[in-house]
Image (cartoon, rainbow, N blue to C red):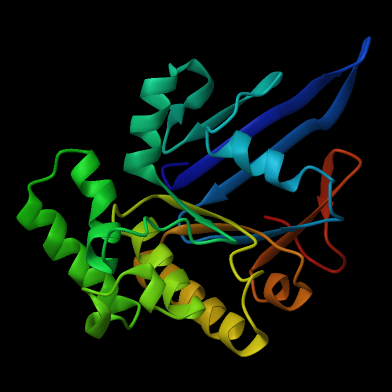
Length: 232
């Protein structure tokens, strides 16, 4: 159990709708270990992003519990969840969400500076991660001067610079052309192997999902095995 990085049990999410409630997620159970790769697939609007937000502590469930790196998120205050996210989780989105006024190096160093790392340490770690994603020649470039694929590589470096236990990725290649998307997928899976970080991907891309060791389909608020995919 020592290498369990994500453990979710009985997750339910309901929203008020008029005089009643809409249950988006119903009794989700999920466990990931260090180095696992899992793709969650499903139709648009089925609740994939909602699930990711619950697992990452960005939202709270109506019922059930989530633990990341041994810490029960549902028992923490909002500030404490923020600290846990900074130390143990990385996030990658379809749109890079880089800060436009800062360089690639400054964007990647930001999570470390937020946790009060010494600027020299933060800069050195950011340089290391940008080199790992093949952008050592783009350290001083701002997002507007980078290609779409390069911006997403910076976002990946930012997600990994804190050495998280798990990275949550929501359609991380959905805004890229096919060739660039494949390159970014290659990079994410290589970094997963290199650093042993668990990778949970929400994607509409069946090809990307098939490259993950495990796939689950979200349907009618529940997670089911994807076709012909053994579950852990």
